[in-house]
Image 1 (cartoon, rainbow, N blue to C red):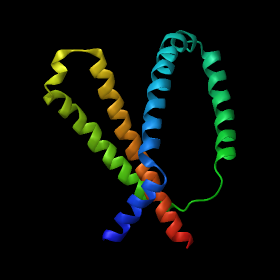
Image 2: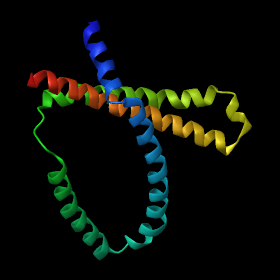
Image 3: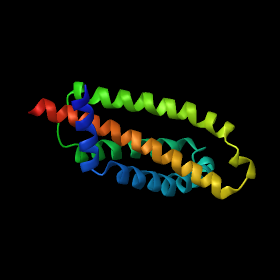
Image 4: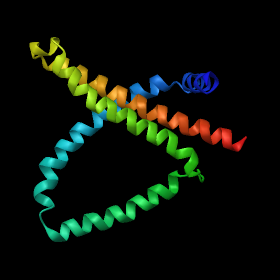
Length: 148
């Protein structure tokens, strides 16, 4: 019981999981919000045209299979994928349910500063990125155990 947990923490430490989670959370914060705003402002009126919508869908269908085939290196069995994915899904569900409860009960939010809100959102992204990478480590450990 203790040995798999120690292997998980050792693998996480060797792969610098917390540093990668911080990097992923920071990059999400920098890239997702401006991209979402641009998409809402620009793409909304443009995509109202049926011809442009069909063209965008066709381009995306052509782009993503090429990206997937160029980045995926090998085959990973489903038995190695499900434990980490399911664990990350459950953990993210718990965080997504518990985080609003925490925000409704914390007293420092009543100050109303935007800096505090940005800090809380960064912590939330950090926790979600850490959970996602922990699920990937679980999958990698299962895959390594299967190869040996």
